Length: 241
Image 1 (cartoon, rainbow, N blue to C red):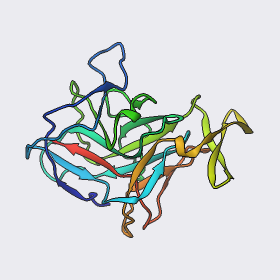
Image 2 (cartoon, rainbow, N blue to C red):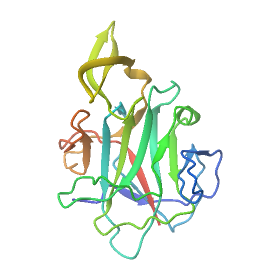
Image 3 (cartoon, rainbow, N blue to C red):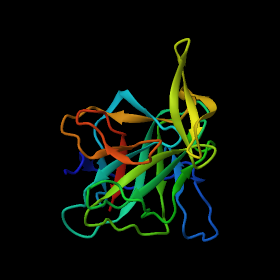
Image 4 (cartoon, one colour):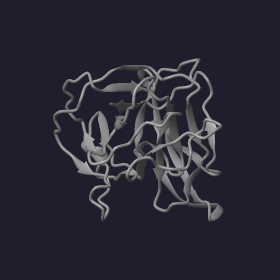
């Protein structure tokens, strides 16, 4: 496993706008969504990306599905994860579902664990995504998130109207794509269809034949499966200090 392509990053000094992903009763346990933040400089932080941005590739985040990118721990010193950044492909349409972001530990097998290292999940509502033109940055200013020795995985998953909804099929009509939505509690039953192009679309990376650190989740079984080498991964950035 290798550290995904990283460059020296810059510290966040200015915030244009901010919106709360969640506001739990414990006000210290919150994750904040920052659309299109301004970045200004400090060499104290390292920005590690999942790959090289490629506008030809995008990932649609549908109900029940998910993507995960593994990042290795820094080689020396104690480090903390400060921010996670997503890159939007299309944000002008009102998305038909929500996006949840978690930072999880890594199992013995190397796949994403079913936990969350953040103080709470970053839940991007339908009102959050259209505010941003290019990026959504998540941060947790009142909490420390140490980087585990094995590293961590950034998980981006789609949520439907209910927790057990998933994409069960595709319908093509007049060169347009619609997703069939089913529920695991009602197997074989289509409860609704949604316009695939109104779901959140996130940018992808340039395909890399050595890419072995990205995973996708089977929408029906909810099992994580490694992506094939040479496929485009989800473009995400981890900001480590």
